[in-house]
Image (cartoon, rainbow, N blue to C red; front, side, top):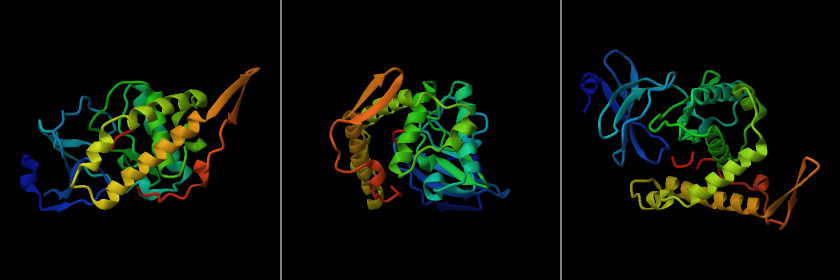
Length: 251
């Protein structure tokens, strides 16, 4: 494994909510804490070194990574959070999008909240692309947890995109995710705890329901005004549902 692990004074399993990694919390001889993340399926090394991301202390060709530990709770566990946290998160997205990068896995378990700020972790697959795809994916994950992006996020981000265009990207992303092999992979993963398997089943139901609602809605544009008219009355509005909150596309 890694030479640094030979100096470790403590290695213990880390209970997390990720679907694709096995996690251990490591205490090094100098007192630092790190997370050893081992993918269930071997993958390529990260393609970029991202300024401001948790420091990568070691990695190998299989995709195992020893990375700086960030104190705090996941955004999924911390909700609801303060406006300071939302502004910090918007600022984090602004910084990476400004230099042309995407995180590419912006689920709420890859965001750590602590001391009034938010940190993006698990930089396994950063890349280049359209920031609207990432913002739409983040909005999608927030929906799965029963919430939405507040204005404080856009304040931190520095601007608010055209929300109709953002919705178009979200619809496209939702179709792509539902058509992906993620669901079969998770369903066939015997190492997943039952509650995690139920979480992804719930995700899939909610995504299909949201997409159906969008396809039932006609958008009429007259004189520069946009009016949304429900073509079919849906049985239940998304904001009225009562899903359990703990369940970028693919986690």
